[in-house]
Length: 193
Image (cartoon, rainbow, N blue to C red):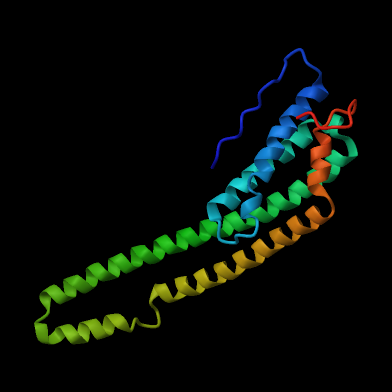
């Protein structure tokens, strides 16, 4: 997980709206810094980091609701949907990793058993032992793990496309422009991040 970008220029005696906009500008830069990975379904770590950046952006919008008004509320809803979709992807990624570790542990255990069998068997029996190892029995736990792994990969694909759908929809609705506008001081026509 990447660390949050630091927010500089905050003033303890400054106006709440000025400090809120400064914080939002940094969280927004952090969030859109992950835009290049949006279309990379297999950017596991980067999509997880985007989830964290989404969470930070959402919490900033929630913390300063009084400053950001209706547009802030709209974008809180968007961030919730993106965060949930990214969270679903991450949950599946964790399960895939766990299943992979279990498959590797079983394979290592079975290799140890195979080596032990080969060590005590006469060379004439090696071929039968190896043939048996290449055709695991129907109750081999790896079969179930492979099926589970396959299902998790399908689930992840669906969750990713749900996320991408939300992202593309929100971008077509002008999410970025809405968020950037929230960083502007209402006293000016230009952004002052």
